Image (cartoon, rainbow, N blue to C red; front, side):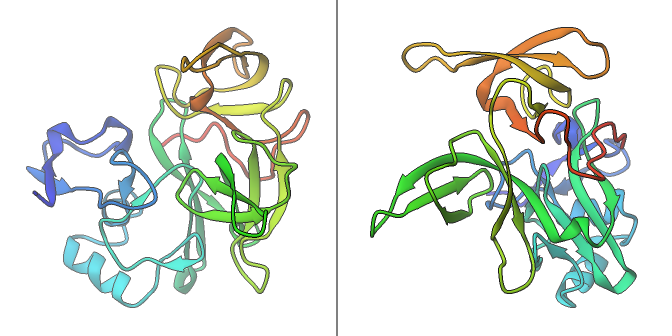
Length: 243
């Protein structure tokens, strides 16, 4: 299988020049799907910290780039929505998210904000001993109590002895703000107005009110990522970032 893809067919969400070269790195299997941007592409095309893949590999070999609290070693590993990237040697920290056009972009944040990350609960299971395990959107699992529900969002710590401890909880509920991460409304931010449950395997529908235009739109619940609670969004969460 090819390790590269033609730039012309690269996801539009990567927001990279399509005609300057023929090929670009393909996203390796990992915590996100193929739409996630390879860390090497971000370092070269967006951060401007490398001119070519050789320099990308040199940077990563020095364990200089930390993704969600872990040094990144593979230049093709994907980074996606609300991943935290830290580069301690230059004192910079970034949150990866969607801009208003649905493109992946990095927003510079403070060192304090880089100590936690926002995660979405995909589902939960009961493991040995009757404990509840939360299965998160990027492949990780954490143990918790039974107060959390699928599609809720939680805030996890990324550093220290209590790494992966839950420090905040944003329920998937009417009145809470959310970002749309899929479909034709990708990148929009709005307040959940109504959740319509449907029978069978058909996804539930969610109606939201756009934060900028106050117009209403609907999407399926799988595309809704809760980013706060009524009247509160975590500091420095720049939901109007442009790439």
